[in-house]
Image (cartoon, rainbow, N blue to C red; front, side, top):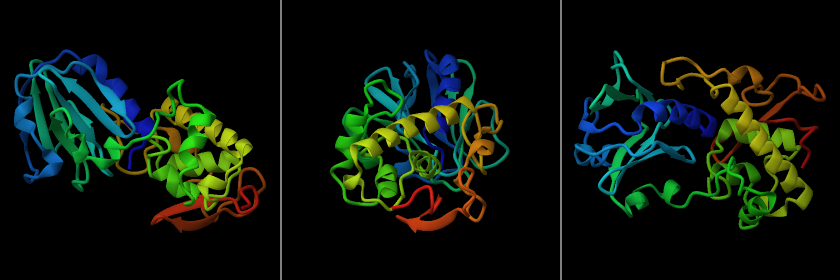
Length: 267
């Protein structure tokens, strides 16, 4: 699933083209009615005021007190050219089109009125943005102190910090030398400080490479993100650790595969 670096890459590519455009039509192409494609008709005649992001969501405020909220899900992609298959939504603009391709239909493409974010609990209760200057070790510590669950699960939960998913959680925990099963509320001040720096570092590195493409994620022009070559633990179970050469191990936390070094990340 695209995480903060992937979604922010797409947002940056969309913004100079979309901001200020007026939506002349919004329609489902091959998507069933339902909450995942909610309120599209309300987008007609509205101007896209900006292209923002909150965690893993692209959020576009529209004129007339509406907002377009897009979640790419596991397989979603946005493109200016109509894709040959799995096109779910089409926005016709005063200049050009925007299409949402989503083979497995796990994404969302919704036009919401003020207060309707409760339709998306993850967005409604999301934590601080990790690349914002206001994100400090103290703020991260406050978010982690509320849960005794495994630190990996807490990072994935989005309440302590926004936008971190399976890939960058594994990478950050390895960089911070923290075992993924460590209860979040038991982390020491030194560990939280290391984890804070590691989260910022791995997200910025992913963003600099245009995100991580492992299968479905694509940039606006259809090209792949290049950060997969820089991953040091995610997806590398059974390979030697880049630090100590111990074989990387794999466990499941919160139904998500987790890769770590049993020596560098001792509990």
